[in-house]
Image (cartoon, rainbow over all chains, first blue to last red; front, side):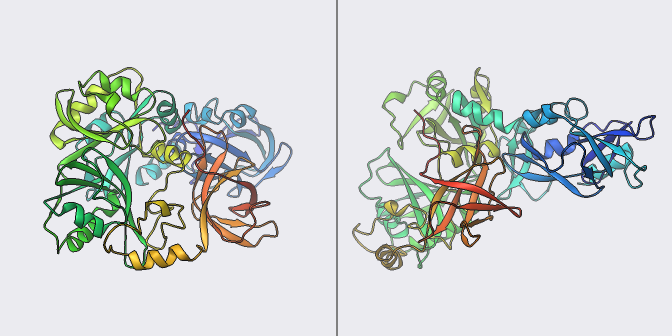
Length: 129
Length: 363
């Protein structure tokens, strides 16, 4: 299962792109491993809207397949600046392209989050699953 | 996933080659899905799906009193069933609690095949051995030597006809015949668990891979896993043992009182308890639910009235690929109003309508 090198990961299987870059806005999605474990995602509900705040480690939505449902946790703290309406309309995009078209929301972060995993540590985590 | 104690069906290597997501189900490593379970579900509704059901149990009863033994052991009336026919029935305990739901096929004058759910094979076999004790019959658990492949969907008959000379047009729903399929000796049954037309093919374990590969090579035939099987049977309103049916459930609560043949000749295990239940209104009944929103009721979630009072429990639920909305089956307390209900979906009440089962019926 692919684990891109440049991303950071939460233990709840979300990825974060753009940390340490010039912008303070990062992109969040769920990993290929999580999407595969869920099965084809048929419904995603976000409990936050643009302009609202998410807290690292707090639930901010749900991801549902025919077989199971899983909470979505925000891996970072900050203000939601964009929500990917394409995945809300057609959640299967998350299965098809979890690290690209399947991004879920963008957050303007106040501080660098401390406890995210690198690709190597995340790969180890999912291999132990 | 690689639990070494789990059993493998004869088709395990085929599933692995196909890249199936394999999970432990009733002690067997079974394909949950190959790619998308929703696509597999749709393939069965629109064309044909191929399922490995080799984990299920096949128990043969043979001898001059095989039918009498089954009449005593099960709730159905087996004796009048002609050769080549099948019945949906149940085995219950003394209190009328359901031990398993079964299909019984009459293979020959004195030979019957009982097909049991994988998780219940030992329970069913042991009960049959015990209950058949006073009868002139032999109980033979053949689960390990039979493979079971199901071909289900509107295209199933056309596909199967390419591989067999058997007169499939004459094989009615809930009938079975022996005939070669793709050069392999098979029992062809017109039964299934999807709500579509289709077949269940019982073959020797040694022949399973050959038969699967021949059928899977046909364009329009999609291998389908247990996830699709579950969403298909839910749409078709078919009960699943462990969900809608348990030892704590009676056939009457499950809306399956029609399979209990209280007026068949002679006694049968559970008869007294079931006769009493038939006289008393059940305390709860199985209903269909369709959610207004997108969040699906799931097994174990509480059904509540408009003022939040618990009045039932969900036994199965999922977003329905065919209906495009979440559906569920639930036990609803007798006397509970049928309007204004909701399901507590992880702390939030999601409104639902009570609807007749099944959710989906083929046209």
